[in-house]
Length: 176
Length: 120
Image 1 (cartoon, rainbow over the protein chains, first blue to last red):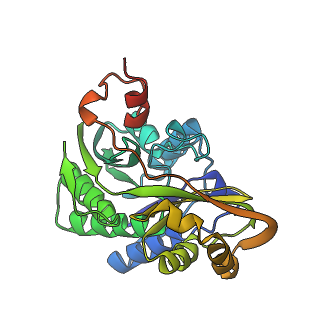
Image 2 (image 1 turned 180 degrees about the vertical axis):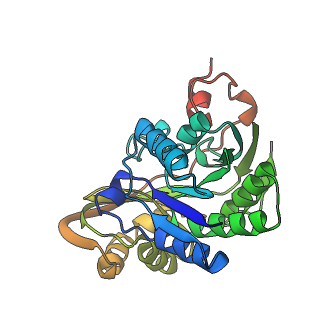
Image 3 (image 1 turned 45 degrees about the vertical axis):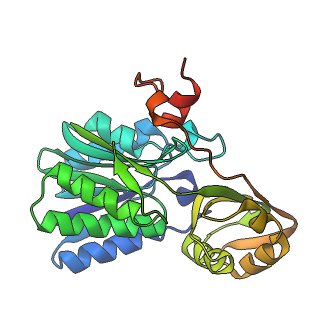
């Protein structure tokens, strides 16, 4: 990896209501894994699918980085509760990527807690991680470990999903 | 495109604290403070300028509700939160399990809960 872009999303992050703790953590993990990489944290985006889609497209096509990491907006969000934020990183990625794998974690109430997408556009790998700090931290760490082993997109996505799942107090998970 | 689904069998409730002034919230610190107070996992899931929603796992909602005063006092030291006279706490009942076999496949929504609720 020589060029990495980190793209936080969320109205509450952009407005400063919530501190962006995830991006510094991910920058740290990237620098540790790839000491020569140029790692850039971009301006946070509002939770608007077109805005997220257009920014991914712009960064991927103009900068041609090795990796883009989107933070936040990975759950069911507004689709489940009107008081929650809008979650669009996974749907924007699915619209943009030609080649990808994804894993969805559902609660037993049927609510999609998180959808992890790992894909490629040209030579750029693009992933998303959840917004909660421990989940973002675990997902990024799992990505780096899986990537270093040369795993497939599907395998990387699964490793990331399992790492997020491990942050919940649950011993009973099943793949359906 | 490959997709797989994983079901997390965890009990949770939604804890909401309203009537706050929130700016520059350190969610990690808040999760840690409330997690230690409640002896469980806490995850911030939604924040606006005056309220915070959190998932709390494997705990009886009544245990949260009866400890309202203590919980509000405990969050005072969290970076980015100002407690006001209007601050109050509420906690939902535990989530209800749905039958995944009765969730429609058709793409009404990306959220299975919504598809389950709108099933014919």
